[in-house]
Length: 217
Ligand SMILES: C[S@@+](CC[C@H](N)C(=O)[O-])C[C@H]1O[C@@H](n2cnc3c(N)ncnc32)[C@H](O)[C@@H]1O
Image (tube, rainbow, N blue to C red):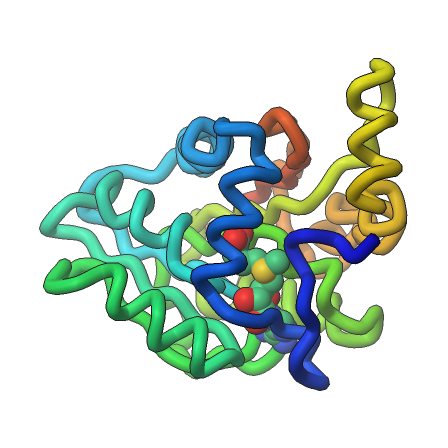
């Protein structure tokens, strides 16, 4: 069975089909804990009011909208995604929120100035990128971060225990997806991030948190 968070495939970028369908699948897939999962990521990234945050591969903008709430009216969240359909939907969902903006773009070539953001986040995107694009994507994220800025990249984690987990892995082919997830700590280290830490955002996500060292260019 197809992975609910990538089905249906519609483009060479591997980006996904109807945004509304994606959100419906995601709500079910996270077992009613989608909001708590993403709030956990926001806390882990240490997002503060007034900050400027980039969400790479924002999809329907769900994470970006929660981030916009965290940065408040003085802050700004920008979501980018190669899918025009996703960006159109995300913009519509954000309504008149002036601190939550969306634009078409790709992780491997971020259309922003160097040292522009306080925080860069990306969820469930790295496993979509071909291997030779993952390193460049992390380096781009580092480039657009200010010195001392924070990176948080989350993706699936392999279910390790419990019959329920294993069952869900079989039903959703979650384990196949999990095998496609790159070694996030290694990628962050190769992109010369510092203070690399990992954590979990139940029920399905694992994240790497890292800092762009203040002395780094
Ligand atoms: C599984 S969705 C995750 C969406 C959202 N981040 C979330 O957590 O719900 C993967 C997203 O990655 C996007 N994507 C695919 N290739 C990309 C690339 N090269 N750069 C940035 N995003 C990409 C897809 O368009 C899709 O919206």
